[in-house]
Image 1 (cartoon, rainbow, N blue to C red):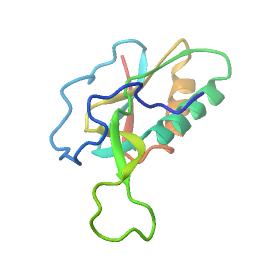
Image 2: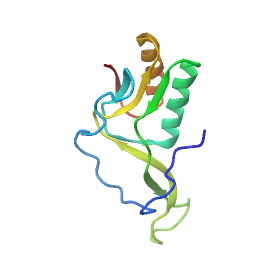
Image 3: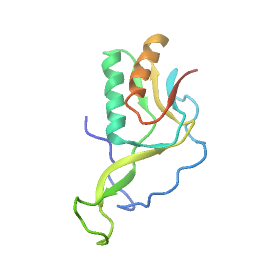
Image 4: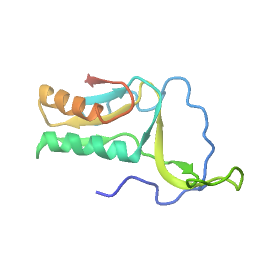
Length: 136
C-alpha cells in the first residue's frame, strides 16, 4: 500500500508547533473491541504507521478488522546536505502525526483478546511512543 500523505493541503509548509497537554479527541474505542493507546507525546511518521499496520496484518493473517485512528498531515521539511545557512525553508520530506497522551492509534475487531494483544504489542514496537493495550 502507498505511504500515507494528504492529497491536498491548505499550506504546503507548516511551522513546528508545540505539542503539549493531553488528547481530548479519539480517547475512547469507537469501532473495535481492542485498541492501542498512546502514553506519550511524539511525532509518528507515515512510515512508522505503515510499518505498524503491516505488523498487525501479518500477525492477524486473514481474520479481524483494523482501523487506523491517526493520519499524518503535518509536513516536515528538510534542507539538502551541505546547504549553507539561510536560503529559506527546505522542501517537504515526509508527513507526521503529532500524537499526545490518551490518543487511540489502532483499533481491532473480530479476533480473540490474546491475539489482539500480541498483534498490537508487535505494532507498538514499531512506534516511537509508549503505548498500552486497551479493551472495551
